[in-house]
Length: 254
Image (cartoon, rainbow, N blue to C red; front, top):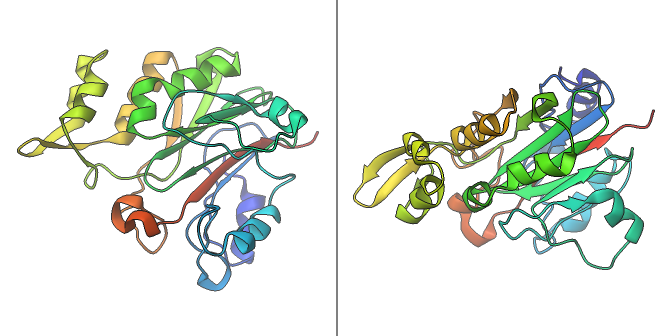
């Protein structure tokens, strides 16, 4: 269900950030930022973008603790966010996903076209976040997150955050091959577009992998970071100047 209290607080603050509408247990908190801060100001969470300090301060108003930021490499490694917080290391873990079982530990991924994915179990005892671009999906980042959660996939709820839509995601033969190598039927989610190019449905590819892994409750999807320029950052649209959105999840204190 939608966390209506958090949604109302964000709206009252003039923020268009997204609160997932999914059947997560009451103790789960989650949100996804947009490119907009208060009064329409630009909002970034990438360290190499202008306005990072202001964005960090704004984001921290809504969180119980600083997120466990990751050094994302489009792979399938999953970080134990509880251990990362306890270790308090100087650098971010090199991973494309994080899992937490301790309340107040915030799992986070950054994206600007890649698919951010949030996961929780139905008992509200474990949460995870994954950064799933086409490379990460093909490498098995979602399956790795499910394994790290150590719970039956049928007991997991998933929310798909804002990503590049199927009418904007033109890819080459390398992407098609990467997804069809182990699953030839994945080809149905690639529409021939022009010679040597296809339109890929990142959301459908993620849903297929999750269902094949045993997940039944999959929610979200349907947004497009490229075409919804007033709301989302997009690397494909804006190139190196693009900022990043943050998608975050944590267990609330009992």
